[in-house]
Image (tube, rainbow, N blue to C red):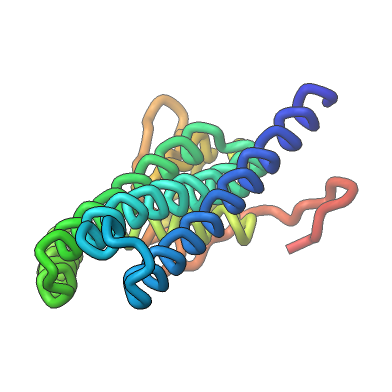
Length: 205
């Protein structure tokens, strides 16, 4: 119990540190723009786009890590460590892609380039991975609403069994000697039947 509490405190310390770094990164960008606008330092004026690119990259990394840690901490509290780790990886991949596109846009001195690249990339990714994204969001919904717990017996789409795992893409159900993988999108779109919970401190749903 003490170890878990200490881990939670350390996690929040890291989040606060990253938040402070993010605010500092925003302040640095604003200061650089102000110095350049007023022509106070010639080096900053001539090298503005490179300085802004470096500051934007730093800000993007800090912001991505902060969001990843917040998501990980929230999911970790629900005792799903594997899902927490995978979700954190997805947040980082998305965040770093945005950082790269932003830096390229700034270096090219063409904001439209970054917006266009991001829009095109977003559309391509959305079409190619719409089922994956849908299942991921459904997994978050399942965990946040406490719809089902690992170890509970459920009945969904005529399939009755015991939940043994909730992954990013699917929920694993054991039926005697068989294993059934149900997409998370099906779990949130279909009627799910389970027994009422009567443990102390839990809502009876």
